[in-house]
Length: 140
Image (cartoon, rainbow, N blue to C red; front, side, top):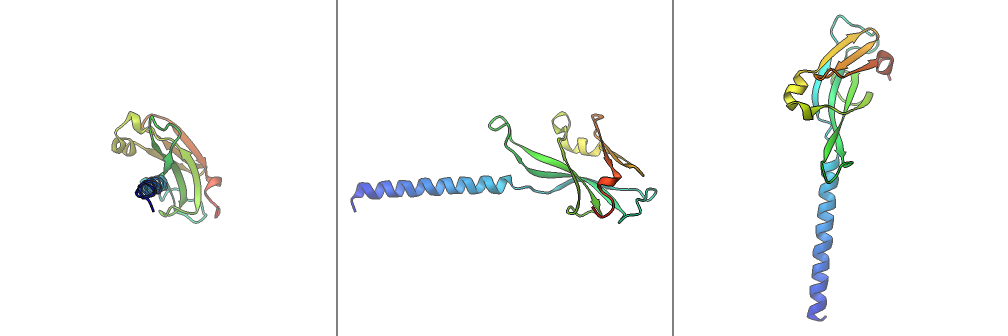
């Protein structure tokens, strides 16, 4: 085989390997971490009489490529379910206001109000989200 053909094949092999490595890295980086950033469980004074106790967690999801190349952020979601394990329960897409706060300060400023009707999630900014008890109780 001529020397030039070998150089072309070698360059092609390197290009294919680089593309595969880049694609593999992006796929691995994009996967949801499912890391619990913050979590709190219902107080003993509230009972839903249905697989209690329930907990609400702020969870890190997959990568949001929407604003690429300007910024790449992670999706987040709120999870309400039985106990502290993230799995079977109620998920709500959520966009935390981290940019306006230090992340640790933001997470420390979250407030929950558990009532018989459900749970209200309040951000440090004052934004509120109410999740009705029917969405996370009764073996859902």
